[in-house]
Length: 397
Image (cartoon, rainbow, N blue to C red; front, side, top):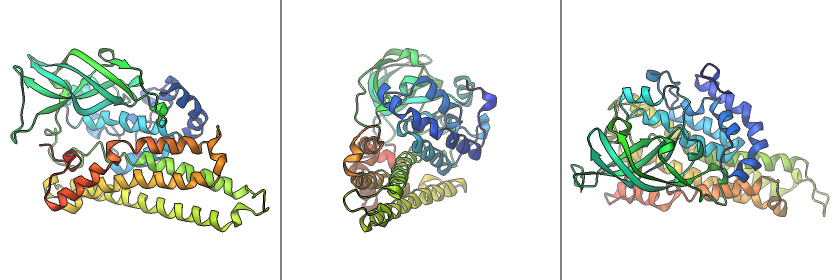
């Protein structure tokens, strides 16, 4: 059982703990997929590595990992099991949201740091202002990890006296509401082909009171400057999941190719020109996209840590991490698609993991973060047009 005293408290310690559980995650991958969620013992296994506390800063006794360090841990976790990595990627938002909640609320809501969150940020609900807070109702989708979440977040447009609140720029105001799991009704509709074990259920909330202190707006960071003050803070570590899945598939095929012999010709795969080229090119692709991700994360963190605000970043810097992120999703999928073809029919039989990796990547690439709207938003921002998804650029109006 996880105890506070046994959880690693540094980036190196958390990464080492994750590496140590990779074999156990692999052993449980079929069960995770079959259960359509992380089993309770797997949740505790992941919790014990310190992954859920990665976003908490030293102010709250957390390890304060950089975005690159968070991504590296998620990459290793996803190397063990993609659904576990995806759930941890969402679940660790607890500490990142702490940078927008009042300090007293954080200490009340997270008496220990190894608590996970799940939910949807998009304002699919309605929050009516009442004394002391809001009455929240709505229906949200894709609550990855919600079956084991300690807190559920839900984006909502806010209303005062029945009228929708608007921002200074005239757009609809929205906030993120944090509610307890027992105030949420789960809808067991997650029967997806990929990321099957992520438990990404729909959920409903009906007329639940949310204290003001349990809500936040990305417009209002508690600390107005620094690496965690910009609205993309919870998006940056997402590439760790596709990078880990692609690395797992590539290592699997390399191990297979080292000993496999073509039954028709007697030629070793290790001596087959086609196999050599595919492996070499996939390594090239993965190295290139991985470099782009970590270079962009390190650059953004350093700039913000030096005191730059989002408005100080030039247009190239504003789109850098978002485009590297899209590229990671798409190019990792392309890598696994190509690797899938090498073993041919061997890839389709269980318990061979190739099919699961491909389905996981196909599914995660349907997330809006890997869609054309992100690329369009980058192009529009560069040209002075209208981005379809301004949030990824830190534009909240």
